[in-house]
Image 1 (cartoon, rainbow, N blue to C red):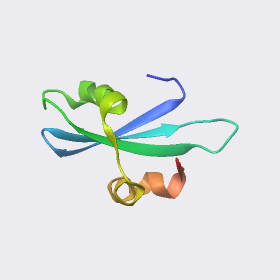
Image 2: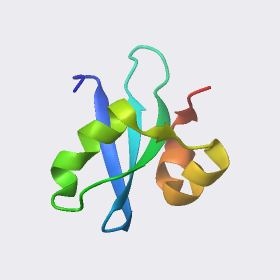
Image 3: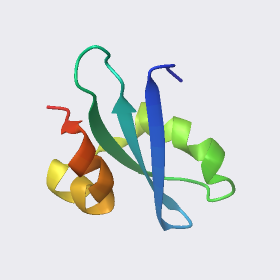
Image 4: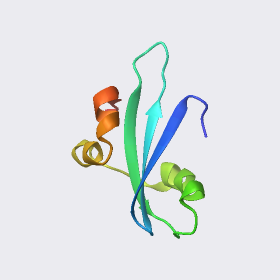
Length: 78
């Protein structure tokens, strides 16, 4: 897990987790992206790291619906 990143999670069901990552690229503007994947559902606090490494990147149109505050604050990573 990188120091310059913040992670936000959204559970769509006990076995589906979405993770948004904000990259703090100081002095450049911060950007964000989001990934989705299935999980065991035992502990989302531990599951999120696997999703950032192996999950599928969400399209911007879907990610901004799940994380509207990130959309208002940060630039989407292209």
